[in-house]
Image 1: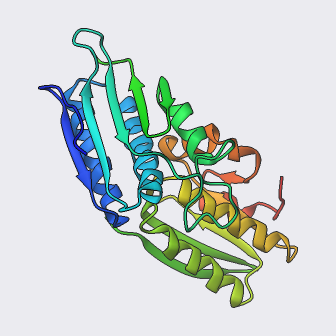
Image 2 (image 1 turned 45 degrees about the vertical axis):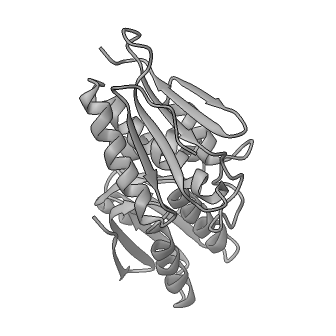
Length: 133
Length: 116
């Protein structure tokens, strides 16, 4: 599967090693900064992308996660991150069942609390920030 | 930036200093440090996150797990954190109501070990 990407988008595929989550966060922050998001919102992107990638990794059969990062509609002043693949309701380290993106999980609370818009369908998670110039 | 962990006794408290990034990759190390402290008899844990630069839901899960664990032994687990970035993660998830969070280690060690 290959994600549809616009000319300004950055597409990232990360394998299932947990250390790759940090790399995905770094790339997401760099692209958000490039798109002109203020620094406090760049921090939100960093955390939210980490969450989405962490839980998408648990969900994917091969643990490979693909992200598309970039401006939304040109001129709309948005920064959009699309994470392909579903989110696992719980991960291997979720001993108490409180962290994952399940209905009342901490991960979902973070996504909703950090991005301006969160749309989760069966196989994609789209996070939107609307502070890009 | 990996995780740095240092555990030391302070009177009847046990301080676990956590530096660096707590995420899905490093959270298991933090869980081990908390479990080891409890196995060594610690009941009043203070997790000093002054040097923590990043925290995600898996890290929160480990802290919640640690708190639950010491509470079953009539202990407590309190946090030290003054970084607005990290505090925001506790606020968004509602965990400021669950954890006692001190701005400095001095304040944490000076405070009576109360749980909210």
